[in-house]
Picture 1 (cartoon, protein in one colour):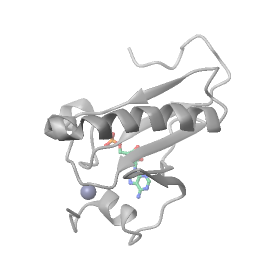
Picture 2: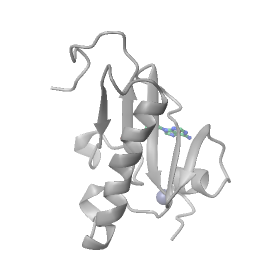
Picture 3: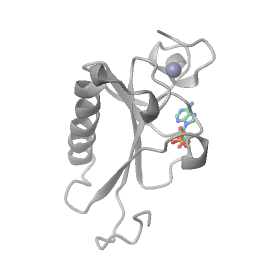
Length: 119
Ligand code: AMP
Ligand code: ZN
């Protein structure tokens, strides 16, 4: 169900612009508007789910598709071998600011020893 006041629902439905890279299998991929890495994409379900906390067993395949899509996009963007992060921020204290489930793909750095990994 689309949420009228949700920016990612608006992007999914084409009411707000985004730089799309993919739309497939109930997911969209677009560029983050404020990139924190040379490659910063968002993998987003078309379906509105607030956060990881709201996943149900029905979403099992969706979540698997998100991770596989992250892997495929990392290869497409050329950061498959040098490395990358697939990241979920969960709720306010976990850094989530857009409350429509999304997975960040961050990568494209020159270094290969994990200097950028969250710890
Ligand atoms: P999070 O903190 O995990 O909720 O991340 C939300 C991400 O969405 C941030 O990295 C924002 O830069 C990004 N973002 C917010 N609005 C837009 C938008 N209209 N288009 C693309 N990315 C966005
Ligand atoms: Zn939404």
